[in-house]
Length: 201
Image (cartoon, rainbow, N blue to C red; front, top):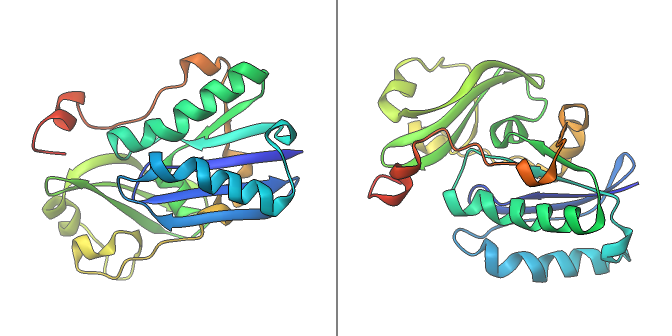
């Protein structure tokens, strides 16, 4: 079973090929606002390294957001078209959960622009605080000093901590959500759509 995983929801372009229970090839690089330009060349390079062709893919997993309005839709659109054309299973996973992986008691922070961040708390893959888009001041006021921050830690005066997203796709295999209808898969934005079209992105 070959699974293609894709995340274009944030700063990074993250791609992975999983054969059964092993990551056999992956890409993770900073591509802010360039994911649409880089995704197909990187996909081809990764497939070549693994000795695979598109017809070898049996299913796909993508992050569903929250994240960049355009970024989330890049991987999602590619996956929906590919899976619909070949009648393949499509799975989704939340971006914040993907970043958390199986870390114990960690808060994920991803820049939502305009002085806000997407945030949630997870403990070994289980959500303990639901995802939200909040003002940085609000988040910082309730931060625990000993709680690990995953993602854009600089937003609250901590170090950035970017995980191995390919490894996390595999670690969270039991949390993949299969889409009953590929055509109905939608991004999770957490912010009103109009906020993406104004200065507060």
